[in-house]
Length: 213
Image 1 (cartoon, helix red, strand yellow):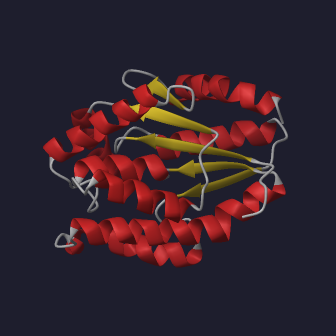
Image 2 (cartoon, rainbow, N blue to C red):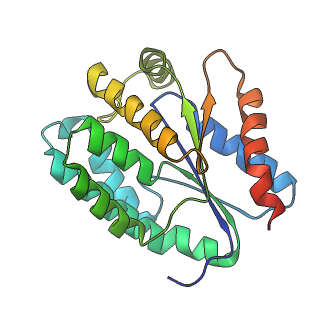
């Protein structure tokens, strides 16, 4: 992949933590500041990836084996990086990606209990060597996240419908990733805060990187 001149900022966290809302707010704030923004997501961040997303989130696919799920997410990411993220970074855009590699480590590695070395290797391969410049981890207790997701959508997709104990492992995995890489992954507490307040904190964390561009 050619040298990138843009920034890769990923948004991570438990279901219902408001990542999608924050991605939209951040994109709007960055555009007001005159920055070029590519807003994308995983799974489904390119036309081909969208077809994989439909499979992954389909509630009727509950029999999907954990290793097969991991490989589908990897296929989605490999295509997404090639079609969407890499071209945007070469253009110099700020890429805001709703979920990326940390979600694989948390959901498939910890949540689905797929062997760690396999998850790590497949994740690196799928990302084509890309490491986020900054990861914003929006942290929310699992019970509150599920409540919000149900209120927002009425029903849960296949990933949101994981057992609460599984989702607790996912959250603990995100917290562990934050402790291991505090320079890259910044934790933002969500509970009891307005979206605008959360966005202001996220912009503050992003500001040092913007100053270098």
